[in-house]
Amino acid sequence: MALPTAKPLDLVAVVTSRTSRVITAAADGSVQSLSHHNDEYVHMGDPIAQLDISELRSKELELEGQLVNAQGQAARAGAMYAQAARKARSEARLARLGASSPEAVHAAQSDASAAAGEGAGAGGSIQSVKMQIAEQKRLIEAANIKAPMDGTIAVVKVHVGEVARKGTIIARVFDPMDPIVKFVIPRAKRDLVKSGDVVQMRVGDHQVGATVTTITDDHDPAIDFLVATAELEKTSTRPVDIRVGVTGYVRIADKGAVR
Image (cartoon, rainbow, N blue to C red; front, side, top):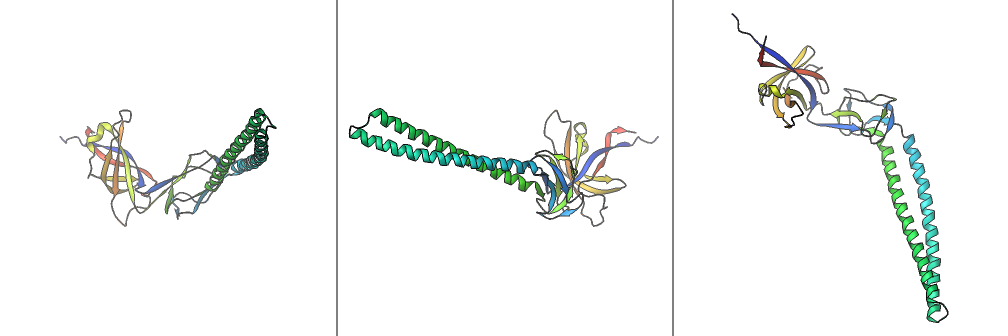
């Protein structure tokens, strides 16, 4: 009688890269255009997407109005302080001659102090508004989303017309020359895979060998799986559909299950 054979275990896997960058939206805005799509090669600084900046422009104009108002307040406060300071000095001289009362001196000094405080407050407002304007300009510039590195665009997450919220992932850029495979291992099957094992990454009808380099365990009981990383074998005949960004599976023999 033939012995039962081990049942294969298929583990979800993705081809990624050792070097990659995530592109995110710096502020809310609808996607007006996408200059590149999945699998296209880009250079650092190439435009990837343009987000609508109309709301950012409106906010910038509003802040510029606030800046003008704060500058006007600072100018008025400066004029009031100069006048109050002159009056305080005059009252002090008159008081020394006995022609003014101490109360008049104190009142003039209080007016000068109040004007100085108003001027300081206006100065603080000016600095605050200038910082906000600088941030709006930065966001407007960042709405023209550019590639952060040379590489292949993959996992484009947005579409033209869609509203991208702040922090939304727009896409990823991978270095296609340094591909690796990541796959998940159920915690109960941890003993089936170890560093140095050669596994087969399968996508459709194609497969390529990969050597397991690390197995990551976060030791979180709420997470019932581990993540393994494997290096794809160096070959010039790798199937074109086994590339960065594609999902497939890694098949291993499950020694704990038989047919």
